[in-house]
Image (tube, rainbow, N blue to C red):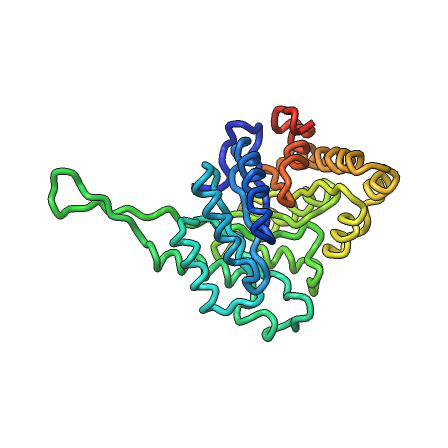
Length: 318
């Protein structure tokens, strides 16, 4: 079973990313957001994981909540940075024991102040290695199921268990640490060869960035679905932060529109409009769905999907 499924409420497959609450007080708000996101029947909701396991416990709590309280597939983030093979194996087993069958395997960034290289990254060196480890641990934990055959004492029907889905990151404009122009595509090919079943892109500001990247990746031999990752950017400060993290040029029109808009609600509408235009353009170009970074708030991402024509507008999305 793939985590990219035919939608029922939405016109195309959609998915969302949330992060673990930073305090007990924010649990209830996140649960309300998850309930609202679940109403559009997304393919999955992913839950981020702090570098070095800084939010591992809370991540698992959120994943369990999604699995228990909704019909949506929970997808667990895992990172190489700060994890050894032993630590990562134990964590993967814990997630599998909780019924989690979908993962996003990331190399991750070292915590601020931590050294780069082996000392800062643990002994998992790449997302491709983490993909292989997830696949191997799942095979060791549950290679098959046994179902008793009615009327035949002692007999059982043996079937393979559902294989885990493993998503990986893709970088439409290249990874900031790439050593040569096509390294990000070579890395994606390595992740695919290791067993990845889906790629989700990092942020981009122009539809052509995504569409051209998919074309290059396909020409190089990438066959797994490549989901566009889109974030409605609703403030100048958030835009500045995103540009710093991605190393991409400032998107001039969006930056100007956010700067000149005097109200927070007006800036939210600017961000929704730009993100919706991006959604429409990549879908028209053949994207297999939309993955939205929700920042633990449902209103803006649902408004984006409504503006893009992916879901029916409601009072809360307007």
